[in-house]
Image (tube, rainbow, N blue to C red; front, side, top):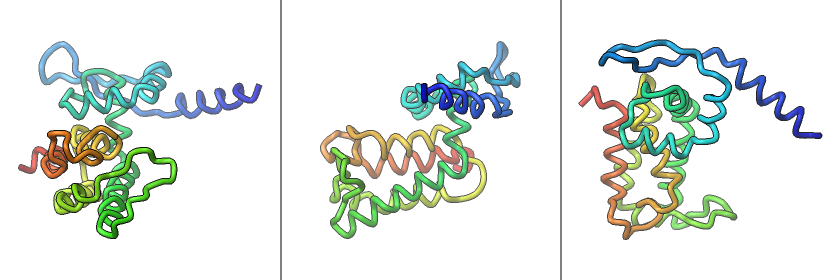
Length: 178
């Protein structure tokens, strides 16, 4: 019966959040405010990977409540700083030839690929650290870059260039500035 208190605490945490999300409605350029339901909050947490991929591919966060909630979470300053810190740690460890990000980590970043893309990865980390608004598309791309074990960070021969993907994510963080 230890799961009952845990579930109650989780429900309290999810329902006590008073955020409102903006969603696209019928006419182009029209948004409506909606208060997310518990089911949407749970789905946004449990389906985070699928939502991250959709956001990274350019699906609008206003398309539905779950995407909006995930976009909110990804663009929070703490999450952005965490991603930037992870990128800097990967670069630092590649420079020192000691990529050991965790003992249980089955897939490790490719040090040569990381060193070759260090300029773009640093620029991405700097943009994530900068204060001000960012687009969820870019944060999702940065997040997937470091969490996708089949991507160019971990496999040099994937066909995707780590430099290109990091530069693209940095541009997508602030597409209005270009």
